[in-house]
Length: 605
Image 1: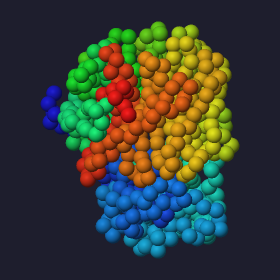
Image 2: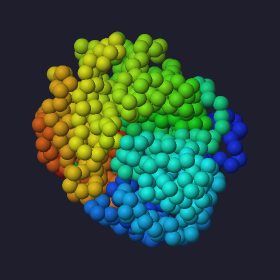
Image 3: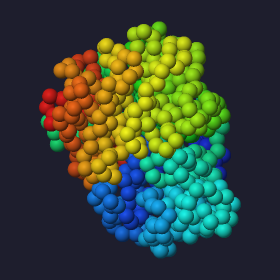
């Protein structure tokens, strides 16, 4: 199938499905674009928010009253905005508007966002965004902007405690936003804390606010698959230890996960290149040299994302993720099984009426699969750890929803030789922060034990690797103790699930995220991820080497000065080569592409 046949096929299908959309709905044919209004002085939470948006392929435009926005405390260096407010004539180019300021105590609230509150252009943009039905996020401390714009009356919102009386006087149904409160959505408006608490949940509610503006019928038939031609260009990160290419179409594309298969590797992520209006699932297979074998887009009129991938016993692959194009609820988890030739063997969705997400998958010894993520349709908490066990044909065998009364979720799952599952995710304490948690689950879906790990506000472990002796290694990120920044977090767990050690690797005023983890033949660990020095919006590829006790031996940041890179996952091929994937985006403008790199650990740093 030619490129133009692919584009015509998917465009016609998706446009017919989405023909019933409201005329007032945002136009998302160019992907998902966010206008991020920065207020002096920005805090480290800007890095957290922009990271969450970036990982979903959202196009983020940073704007402010001035060309540079200074940092609060030790958050980093000044951010040079993409555009000043004077350079933004209207909101027609955007699908969402973001307002997140630094956290403050009640006595200082009058000083927050004054540059935006005193700028008529900022107030007009917020009013216009609401009038056009754009998804609109307003953090607790930025709530004064919403009051100034006159957009509170008749709405149920969370706001800073100092704004509660003014909010009520303006006709809103108001409650103080605490670090323990998950975000609240009322139509296209999302409100909540813009601190370190619940950044992931806030971004997910932004997606649901965007969904609320779209009208289409949800059906498994919507998840149509078609060839997606990708064009490659060489990538030079300035290091002899890396070689690779960026692969993309005519819109934004990104890789989220990768795994080895016979003769090569296969990745998954998201693509906007087939112009369905929102994200579609990207799946692409490469040979051991990095040459493209085949690539597919699968999706409908909603938001469809591949989040994890594993190999099947017959040389194919299974992709897990979430969809708003099909299923029973606001979001449903899905599994798609592909043959080695790229044909779809079957597609399954799982979930109830509430949002349910698939975030991780593993193959099981009997030829089946186990999906993990979170559910809001079952369980006792605001969200619960969720596991769906299926056989080789995708038929459900059992499900598990477990957790406390607050949000719980799982990012990764692996099966031990004993048939026991090890699940990695986060749980939320009464303080409102993320703590990492390891669950041990029996082969028939019973919780055997849990192990928690966390230091302060945010500790998120996302990637899980099992060692031959039954122990486990995990990597992720957390807030730094020495400054307002982010650092890599690594942990080791024994076969009984007990924590052996947990380490934080911090660089002063930097923003680092661990995403992939590989044991090396020497017994050391290779960590890959994303790093930013000073300016949290300027990201590069990060590599770290640690010994088996978790001591960092070196850290290396490499990148193209003309582009921003984000690394999401890593795998080791049958040849012994290390492959990492993510995305790269030109700083001067243009669409981002999926990034595929071969890395030689011996040549680093």
